[in-house]
Image: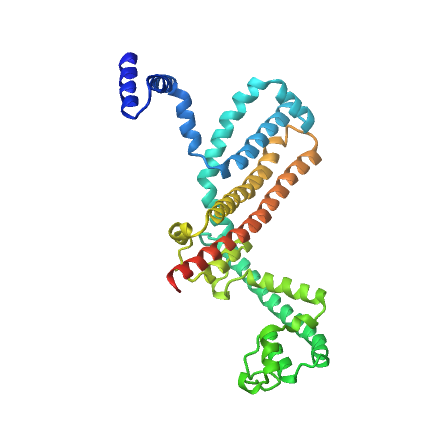
Length: 364
């Protein structure tokens, strides 16, 4: 059989323009690959199905469970001794951790999408779940209202300081009124001063309105406070679209600004991602992978925080060590949530770029 496959490989090589030595080398490679593929090829195929975003959370889960098992079996929480003891028995470590790592990776990959949806606030159910959803939405609505009120107050205070400076610089009263209307979001003609139409302004005033800004006359630290409030306010969608979580509101507010999404955010990416250059496509995949990974960190941190006392109480006498270990996992989960928010903001920037390029392509 091997001889026949070698002969047929030579014939294919001759047909493709390969010389005899190249054909023999390729035939040997094909033969060795077919005879030695077995288990290794199966493992490779399994690993190819696992995404990169699942490996790091799974590694954390596998390593943490291994440490907790050592703490439980030895009756004390001693990280240095646990690492030394595990490293001393390398084969036992490999036999224990590798299957655990593979199983954990498959689990984290299977639940990564569910984890993101849960962190966004898509919670089904009634009773306590519905009550929590309602209370959190009310909380975000109050915060949105407070942000809007504080932003307006800070803008009024900053503009009140900048107004005399603008007048001293020779700007007309009408220009100052127009800038005040824009800064405070007042519709034309509804302020304390009458609105002025563009044709009634001098050419100097029109140039000032087009190229200048009242912020030039404002203190930088006041502008920094206003910009921070504006950024926080922009993280929220319209009140009727409010979500119970901060992550959900960031993604929802971006979704509502996309003109070409039509309520289908995932479909937009699938249909229009090719419009991005290669670098932005890689950035999209990078931030999406990070979002998946950090979302799993949240739930793994919470799971380990609960698992720690369940495994160690009654086996480890040091309550402080148990509490500190569980607290570390809580902090890890909270840090994962903040990292997920940062990744979501970067991911939303890519989505806005996809939307912009789609509108350009179709002349919208």
